[in-house]
Length: 310
Ligand code: AMP
Ligand code: MG
Image (cartoon, rainbow, N blue to C red; front, top):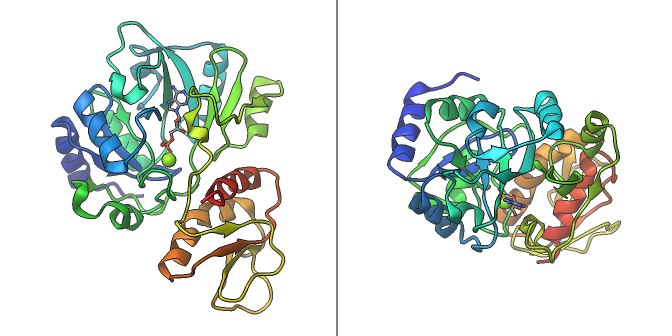
């Protein structure tokens, strides 16, 4: 992708004066602000209407820049080497002298850290002398944004600038792994657990509890398109939109498919845009067919399950 340096410069200027800018990443678009600035982080929470106890992921250009804020262990180094930059977020211990805003972490002594792969995000991060706090660029509890137009749809003129970066190639949020003690997955995401297990050479538990404030990312209701979603449905109701994993039979106006042939990566990429499309067409509810519970299908099912709690 060709990088427009004028757009990068504009983003840089706004971020340097404590404003928020939406940025493209390979997972989903992020709503970014200076992670060292309390006021910039406050703006992010306000714009998203995000509960204060749901801390932000902080994005770094590389490991060198992370050193001043967090300590890390060998598991981190192994995963960093294999998957970064990429769709994985690490929960690490904050160092005492770290400048990370306490608003971003909700005063936790841990930090969620990611190194995005998107060339536009990387170009911007390289130019800044602070990391970017950037949760997904959507209203809290709603569907994430996978394009600049999604972001504009959610925020309109409320955000100063949306940095264009095309469509997010993965389309699902990062996989969050807590590496402080025994590794555990706090949120399923765009990187398959099997891949992580291969590198760490052990089985990793998924800690998907909703009660533990250490992993507030696992709120029960999330990723909602704003209308009811029914899961594992074979037969839809009249006037309902229907989502299937692959194209089935003749195309009907109320039938949507996530991929042509059932490819789970393609389905992941299309999930949020399909939910948004259906909402815009004014359907009152959505029925979803069975999605295979393997690979990224597990993440898709996790998101749909939360979306169905509307
Ligand atoms: P998003 O808002 O979509 O970017 O998601 C960020 C996720 O990271 C949320 O689910 C947060 O709860 C989670 N998160 C951020 N910081 C921490 C932390 N220190 N410990 C555990 N989870 C975190
Ligand atoms: Mg989010």
